[in-house]
Image 1 (cartoon, rainbow, N blue to C red):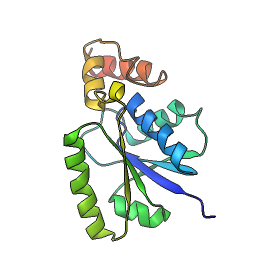
Image 2: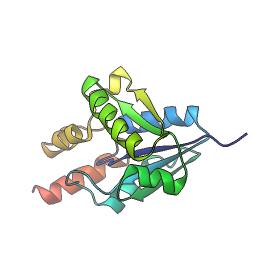
Image 3: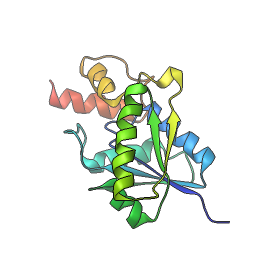
Image 4: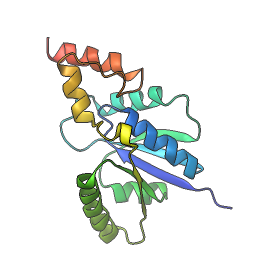
Length: 163
């Protein structure tokens, strides 16, 4: 039987417990998951390499996954790695609308590509990387929003950037 291998892309800036939950659930469905940290997107707080390193450290306890970086179109990453499907977490109807549009464009660029949407657990649905950064920026406790290794790194970065 062929190995069931999925790709879980995102910016992970910073990695959250919501991201971790999606990865853990994807690992229950697939033999292997490649976490692909995207270089593009909004101006990140952490560099690409820092985000890759944080994901690796946060998820060191999990098996059957690897964390890599990529720059460019998701469909090119899928082609290059010969991996399908793509895993995406959905927190709200707004996420669904956004992801649905992305799938439509990606399927035009790579017909036959498949996407698996995993609904966020209700207790994690409010967690967004942007909100985590905002809470941390004002000294709020992010320990229930990010893996333990991420909180001190996030606090240190924001202290440097906003003394």
